[in-house]
Image (cartoon, rainbow, N blue to C red; front, side):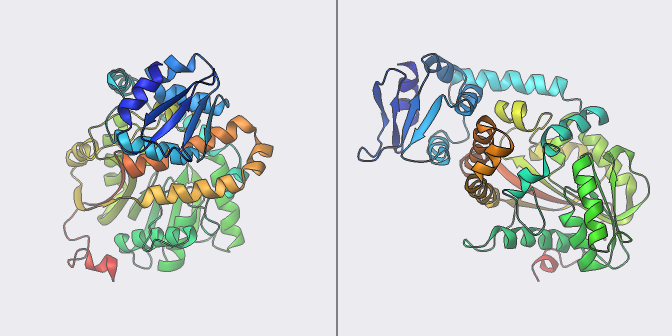
Length: 398
C-alpha cells in the first residue's frame, strides 16, 4: 500500500496502525501495540490521494468523515506526525506543490480593499456565537495569548498579552491610539482603561464593528473609544501610538510596503507602532492549502525577511523584536479544548462537517506551532531612536 510505505518512512519516533478501506492493517513506525494510535481510511481512493497531496486531501477527507482516528485524538495524531517530519515537506511532490503555490500566491495575492473585506467576511462574519464557544470570556481575543505559567488560564494569558503590548507602547494619558484590525475591541477597551488614551479601532468585519460599538455604549466609553468599518489605507489623521494584532497576515505580501508607509505617514514623529503577527522562521512560503481554501482566504504568513525590506524602504526603525515560541500552540490547544467541549452546540449551529473542519483547523495549527516553523513576532517600530524609553526592555518587564 502506497500510503503505508510513505508513513513507515516518516515515523522515526513512535508510530501508528493504519487500517485501509478493506480492513487490512499496516504497522507504520513503532506504535504502542497494546493501545496504538490508529487511523482508519474508509474510502479506497484515499490510499493514493493522501500519498500524493496530503496537505489538502487529508483535511477534506477528515471533514467528510472518511478518516477516523481511534485510541487518541486528531491532535494526538497531528502532533506525532509533525514531530516526525518537522518543518520539512512530507515528500518531493509536496515540495514541488509548495513551490508552485508560493509562486501562484505571490502573483495573485492582490488584497485590495474590496477583496480584503470579502476575505474578512468569509471568516469573521460567520456568526458571533461560534467564537463564544472557544475564545476567552473577558476580552474575546482571537490571537496568541502570553503564558507566564504552565497552568495559567486562557483568560489570564490573554490579559498578559494585552498588558505586555501596552507596556511596549509606552502609553501616556491623552495619547491618540489607532488599533488596526481591532477584532471585538478587547485591546482597544483595555488601552483606554489603563492609560486614559483616546482609542480608534478599525476592522473590515461588520459584525465586529457593530459588536464593538454596542460594547462601548454598554461600558459608557463611547466618548473615549471609537470604532470604524474601515480599511487601513483609508485612515486619516495622526496617532501617537499604533497597534496591530493578528491583522498583518491578511494584508498580502504585495501590500507590505503600502502598509508600513501608511503607518509612518499617520504616526507622529515620536510615535511607536507595535506589530504582533504570526511569522515563519523558515524561508517565505504559502499558507497551508486547507487554511487558504477553508479558513483564511487571502492569508499569508510572513518571514522576518518579508517584513524587513519594506520596513527599511519606508524609513521606519525596528527598535525591538521579540519572538514568542510555544505561546500559540498553548493558546490553540486551549481553544480546541473549549471548542470540543461545545461541539454539540457547534453541530447544532452549523453541521458535523463544519465541526470536523474547525477541529482540524485548530488541531493542525496547534501542532504546526509546536513542531513546525511557525512563531509569533512582536515588532516595535519608530521614526526616531528617542521614541522608546532609553532603558530598553526594562520598562516592559517592570
